[in-house]
Image (cartoon, rainbow, N blue to C red; front, side):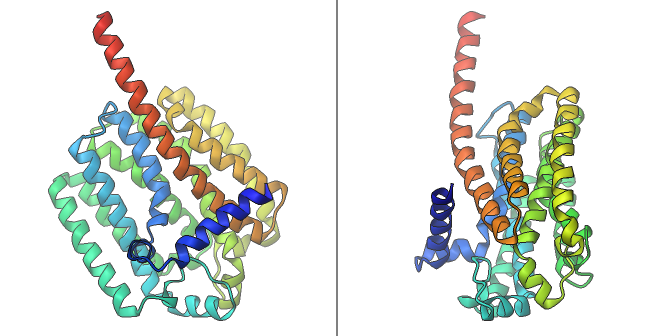
Length: 314
């Protein structure tokens, strides 16, 4: 297990230290942060489009959510200057501490250009409900950092992140593809607690810096009660999953990804430390990305095979 963690850590360090233009672009875009919501969007969107991988709004919707994630994270980067400086001076160097290589001016222009690109893509999609949900999320991302700074308010900050990574992509699919409401509710129930747990793990990994600067995230506020909360999340995640499955069978489509998250959360519960949380977060991201590629390829093959069999038989 240690070798696997070390290998994941080395890969992340390689990405965060590479001098290539592509790597620097991905870092200023905070592309990794968009992965969880794109995983859910990919699966739920494929179900609502009947596994039509080339549905125009499906592709544009994915691009819009990616740009939305970049814009929200970009705004957060602009106003977390002191946190980043403290992290660097303390020797806590992570890929998202962008001030070590980008200037404030570069970060500002990245935010401006990304926001413009987002507006253009949303306009091209031409779906009013989707436009409203993007505008709401953009606004939520602004007050998450400033002026209300939800990230410093226990539970509110974590719930905001949970919405962005879970409910946002599901609701986006519902509005973009006129999805089934029952399936939408089922997907939401199945993914909300595992996503909340992942966001909480990210806060646990950052507790060292947060404590030094006086940030009161949910993880900091819970303190010694964190392990109990994680155990409760594990239990209720499983309960909600089966409830969601009873509501709609389509929940089986997201099952492999939920298993990955819950398995890693269980490992953290069994061996709980802040540093362990950092490793677990990396493992969740690495496993989600690898499995998503395999999952999509398999879905294409099985869907095409089923379509051919259906035509030949009927």
